[in-house]
Every structure is written in structure tokens, then in C-alpha cells.
Image (cartoon, rainbow, N blue to C red):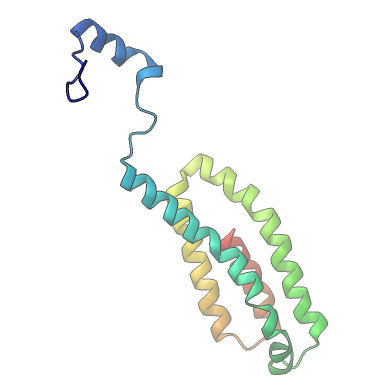
Length: 139
């Protein structure tokens, strides 16, 4: 067969291909759509690490601004890590029930709201709670 010619498929072979799962396409998404999904997932995955590591240089200024000790500020880091370890198991179960897309959007909204609250807070208790909420949203 020449390289420019198309292979002709008989109606019987076409019917067989429709019922044979091994001949079905692997994904119904177009290559562009699959690339967009991968970019969106990668973009969302960067927030947990970013929120964790961007916080370290602000430990001393936070302690002095909130008139608290560095040890208590370090407790917010510990609580962030603990919630970051627990939240995915809870959110994963909910995603299995309700779907991944709605939970992904809800988690991103929780993360954004926690960041706004962290920017506006001036109390240590609010800092501790909002860091845990931020961790849950970014997980």
C-alpha cells in the first residue's frame, strides 16, 4: 500500500472495532484539552508548596507584629503540615462521592478566602485557624 493511500475498512471490521474495547480510543479528550487539564492540575498543585515555603521568611516579622513568640508562630507551621497530611484523605473521599471538579473549585475558593483572611487578620488565634484552613484548601 502506498504511503498516501488510506486503508479501507469493511463494514464488518468497523462493527467489530466498535465493540472491541482494545480498539477504542484511550481518551475522548482532544490533545489540546488534555494539555489544558494537565496545566490546570499542575497550577493547582503548586499552591501547597508555595504557601508553605513563602511563609518562612515572615516568621520573625509575624512574631513581632502579633506580639507573640517565634515558637507560637512555628506552631502555625506545624498545624499547616498536619492538616496538609490529613485533608487529602477526607477531600479524596468527598471527591469520589461528589466529583473531582466541584471539589477542586471549592478547595480553590477556600484557599483564596483563607489567604484574604490571613492578609486582613491581626490576631494569633486567627492566624493559627486560617493557616489550617489555607492548608486544607491547598491540599
